[in-house]
Length: 180
Ligand code: NI
Image (cartoon, rainbow, N blue to C red; front, side, top):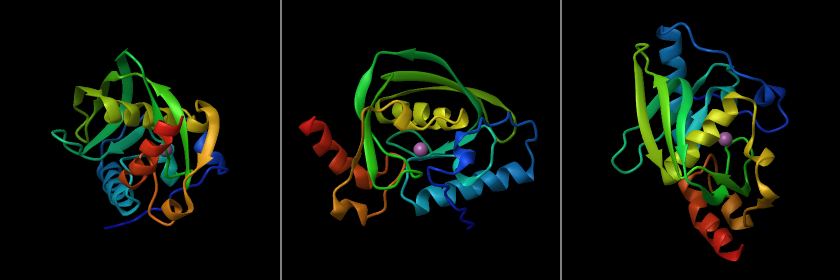
């Protein structure tokens, strides 16, 4: 298991555009393995390569319900439907959350580690995560899209692991939703 350091807001790398991945090699596989390890260590739902300092169009997303954990290489949104308004967090902005409008459903096209193209449809929390992670590949942070600015999680919550839409945050996020 190899953990990578998660860059925090303020680091210029998070504001740069990532490049297309052309090499589907061992190095790319190692990066993806490390990203899964790092995401799980930080208790996040998703993680994008620029967050670990690598400007490549890659993100990973944890398994949710019937969907398996997946790595997305060169992902693009090819369709989106509806709207959901809800709270979001990010491993690069620990201890904070904000309310962001996202599509309720998205269809994403990407390549797997063999370079094979695939398409998937996601809704709800996963659709939110996919949009959030793809934004990272363009140097966009959810702060840029949050209506009403960012808010601090409760002090109690700050001590627990927080991150990209982490499960730990969901409780306080729901409370935040209710109070909006
Ligand atoms: Ni993030």
